[in-house]
Length: 222
Image (tube, rainbow, N blue to C red; front, side, top):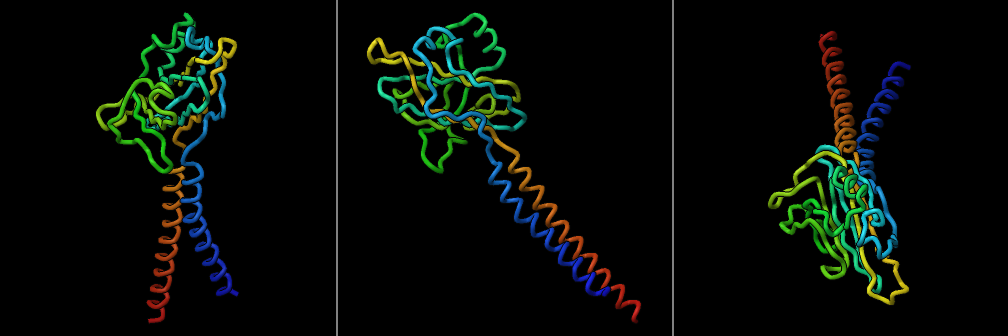
């Protein structure tokens, strides 16, 4: 009965270790990025260009080393949009004054024309605003607070993604549609590392304990 219990214990411990080692990469992938906002299409009006209160605005809070990711596209006829990222303090003041969005200076981010599996991290292509479709129709943006050369710099704090635009079609058409997805880094990497560490430690501790038990038994027999 004692051996059976030991065997069951071994199965439980090893099984727990394997579960942790499997769940680590699973949760790492699943929670790698968290979607804050997604709409296809998002619709604003032409008056968004004349006052910030009519522009699209999504608040974001970034912690240390956390990255903001924005995917934005403009495929719709006659529509043109501009995207900027600004500090919450700047947004609050500009919103209270209903300032013209084009007069607001955005913060630096890096970007690339979107391609599946590609990322602009480390790109030297940086700017404080992008206008679609004149600059391109589908962009991938990364932002952490600031940028110097090839590197994104982490400045934790509260920010806003703002988008405003116009429609060059008939005067009766004032809608400005565009597609946007906003994400931030999730806890995936941390959970992945933590679960793999826990799984490995469980296995190592069990093997060491089993080895000590065997050596102790052999010593007592001797």
